[in-house]
Image (cartoon, rainbow, N blue to C red; front, top):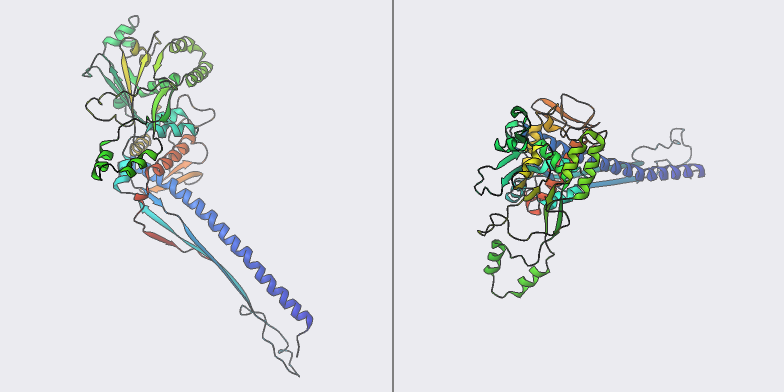
Length: 458
């Protein structure tokens, strides 16, 4: 008995439809998995950052991990067969029925993957993590559009004022970027404010310089950073020299290889007049009553100037053969007219050098952990002046908020949330920390790979 044409056509069309459906099934599976892993990895990275801030705020050890490249697999299978039928005369009605079951037409699609998680606890990683942030990195972040004030608050560890006529530092002052009043403010000798402000009553004469004063100083003076290619005539370090001495003398290959290396880049802090003028215009528009103060600030002179000559002479301490301290820059300020603020006027009575030291990445976490306990409305957690329409706080982490979070984490049975609306500076800080960790991670840190097997459902 032969199959009727309509039956053959119907069977062929149905089989083609089933086979054609396999491709969109696989596409939708792979597409959804890609988006899922993209969002999951983003959340995991931000959650790890938040957890380390919470650990730092509770004086607990920090933990750093990294995700290795994700390896995914996808497969599809399909099968088609003709339905069973009986051939011969005198067929019963039941024998004339053709049943299409999963044994006749079937298709399946699966997707899975593996991802490696590495604990970053190697010597090289922590050496980089505990080292002060270089000015080249600071310059790079500034070029990405991050607010200068946020960078200054995150990366500055301390500011030291050292009178040039005091080699022993008996009258030096140091101001730390720390939420505690004892560390973030420094009291100057009484003779200085008494000399500067003789017309003010003694109890109204300013006698302290706090870090908030230095923030305003940095903005109005145009404190910035710049980079250049390091001079080619610089001598190799002792470590590099010892490695060369270990080989055969006159090794032309090592000499040519070192000569072929691209020039290294070095950075420094400097004062940008254009940034200073812009900050003064914004300050004058926001506070017209400060016109006289701004006029006095304009007469001050700052060194070095961005775009100006670099001083290649060894810094203080290099005479004994030691290299300059990384992440430390020495600046000078000359004030001609009193401004009424001690952070400027102190430079009119003594020739101070300003030394600024940067934090390490590890120290940034500790700083944010301290801010965690001083969010509202502490001045140490507020930007000045705030960006238009933005949350002025540097760190915003709400305790007990389960919904509406940019990222959340459970820590010691409490839930902590960075709100999705607002908290612009907090989100910028998370981005900065992620980039810093990537800069500090090398291939040598990615050796041990404990693998976590993910088994997604079909």
